[in-house]
Image (cartoon, rainbow, N blue to C red; front, top):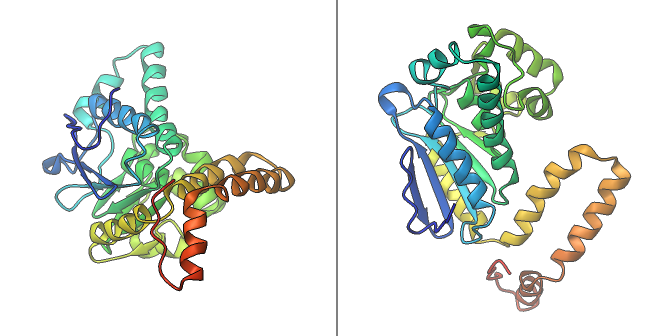
Length: 269
């Protein structure tokens, strides 16, 4: 898709762009912001497009009306799925997985700002983000077993244990129970709790956007890439990645600023 963050006007969620920070707001507050086939599609395509949009330095993902996302819409997704054949079901599950792939593949740090309900696919969107801020009332639930499905959805069995540990992830994925904000913070799912998680997320996003964005992009890439390799391979990968960062102008700006006792003015090149 052709993508200009300054003029982008999605149909199925709200979009804001300012000072290098893109804010994506799920916007069906009357239903606690559930996803539909169309919003899944548009979110996936947007995150794929962000892979080539370096004007965007950081992304905030949130929901309107005091809730984050209640998952797939019962009437617009769950009902139709019960009438699909195997090929149709596999096409759907691959499409939803592609949304997580796109979130992980885009170079920008993604910060989820979560209030209220964060359930099903909503919990997956928070999980797939790089950082997660939550309000004290946030309740996350990987509730797939409550509708007769496995916890193996959109990469949950791979990603969630890496965030909170195997045993805790197993409990949430087997039971589908709510994880309270305090519990999620203690387990490391939430990076921090805040009365206004959106304001906190945007503050950090602006901070990241004003920093060495190319270096941040490399950090995100390596955090994912090093899941799959030995420590020896990871050390070599990081040596190569860091050597590339040392060739950037931002690295030289930082040295010059330090030598002159002032703050560096990072420009992302």
